[in-house]
Image (cartoon, rainbow, N blue to C red):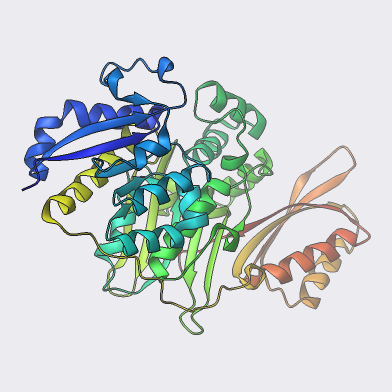
Amino acid sequence: MVDSIRVALLGAGTVGSQTARLIVEQADELERRVGARVELAGVAVLDPSQISDPWIDRALLTDQTLELTERDDVDIVVELIGGLEPARTFVLSALNHGASVVTANKALLAKHGPELYEAARKNGVDIYFEAAVGGAIPIVRPLRESMTGDRITRIMGIVNGTTNYILDEMTTKGLDFATVLKDAQAKGFAEADPTADIGGFDAAAKAAIMATLAFHRDVRMDDVHVEGIEHVTDSDIAAARAMNRVIKLLAVVEQDSENGAISAGVYPVMLPADHQLAKVSGSFNAVFVEGEASDDLMFYGRGAGGAPTASAVAGDIVTVARHRVAGTTGPDIPLYSQAPMADAADGESSYMLRLSVADNVGVLAKVSEIFANHGVSIRALQQLPDEDEQGNHELWITTHSVTDRVIRETAEDVAQAKDTSSVLSIMRVFEDAQ
């Protein structure tokens, strides 16, 4: 009979500290849920002298992380240090020494996931990672377990709280990107170096994980087409508002029903204002899953923060602890699919282009001719009445569905036309039917 489950915690930052608190403060309740005492066996940090959390016993602190992962008395290693290395080395060490692993490391899973899943399978242990996507939102387990009897066709999600906060502030307060980013950094919603968030890379790692689970194929972060929000302007926000739309940074993964090709991308999208994802505000996250049998499902909640993320980590610890007590493991992550990855340039969507054009006779006809020459059907066209300092007018064009490659080629030709000074922006427009 198993009397205790011993947990080694790697990292005691915001999430690690809150995870330790949950283990210590809820020890009695967790014991009743697991059937054995869940207790900390060690906490690895770079500098133990800097840790002052009252719920972490200082006798458990160590800077010998690798040694902690190799200990025979450790049942579960919780990796919360982030990054690729040395996190990969520590996780593999834990798995190879017979410990199960719980991690929130999206970058690690998006880069080395299949290697880690195979190591867990080979060693007869678990690897769980609910907190890697969407913080407290339970999305990984539904994709990994609950929906494995269904065929998932598409997932669309707001999976980065920083970018959603920025776009929401720009939309509701009419502020420009630089102003909102500075405010987000001051409030702790954005990192000092926000590149991973605003560039879409954080969301891309999560997209790769969701695609891997949904389509049973090895999808890496390099397979994800990425566009961030750094070029979204207050004029784009105003254009969306005028069209009764809202701009959101979405992670989108889907599988073509005809050829089976898988596409994965992160990019700004103009959503109808009444779409469920358009209503997700502030730093909240939401994931919209479409299944053939289940139809539409939506998961919503806090996607970041110490306590919400620690909640997901603790949930995985309880699950894995139950498995250890029962002498079993959870389901494998089968990556059997040989489906091809689609070329992002072949992805289809409606688009909205903002152009700056001269107020000359025939300019609209010329622009329309260029679109027609590329086979792009125009759904709506609107020229704004106000002139800029150069005497140009802004022209808004919304297209019917077209490939990304064709719309980029069309935009290049428009930009070179005689009376067009510039293409100000190109953005996807999602319809309810898309």
